Image 1 (cartoon, rainbow, N blue to C red):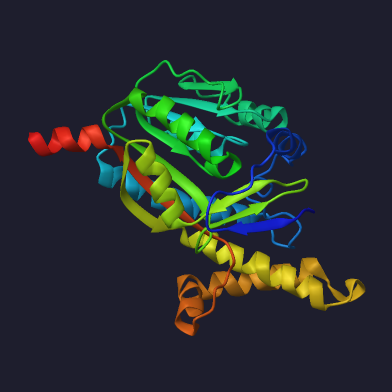
Image 2 (cartoon, rainbow, N blue to C red):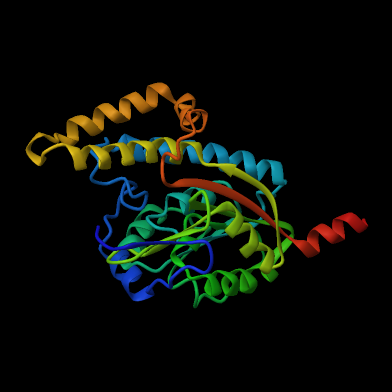
Length: 290
């Protein structure tokens, strides 16, 4: 992965969608690839650990929001289909959108047994909603969109939310401003404050924000391995060995390890990740009046 980085407290540099598309067209159709966990020596179980732990968070957030399992879920940027399968098992219907042909084909194979899963190989910006959704799920989608398109997408989708429905986002974040990565892998990492401002522009209220602890833990491991690669000569790096050991130590330490950086006043890892639970302002106003 190559390319320059640019930090900004204002508007982020624009990312190029053609470059983003090329990157994901070559992505490995595994749980590790979309999680950006390939190449660190972690066992395949690391991807399953992170997904299972995130499922527990999503289940709790959905339950707290009172979302009815008889509803329809819209899953945008569905990747290899783990979330589409998860929603198909728990809701009346899921509509899943994925632009990468490689990842879409993997999702299609994974979800073939679910008659309640509608799968579309399409760009999310060109998708025209038809159903009414109890939940719109964006599992790491907004960070591949420029600001104006984030706003345009959310403004297009949210009128199709059922009353009381939620938008649930899971996005990688930075501590302040924005961080744009360019080159062959292009992405915009935004801070909590930046996302809150974006959501407000779309008529959405941020009802709950929560750190994605399993992401935080695995990202610590990724950045530890990256640092190891910069200081150790390549013949001595032994990435499979070091990565496997790092993963085991992280699993042993668990949530406790994620508290150390803040306690020590260290901005580590560079990237974090958060879940955002959003509701339309009009729904909240209607609830207040009733």
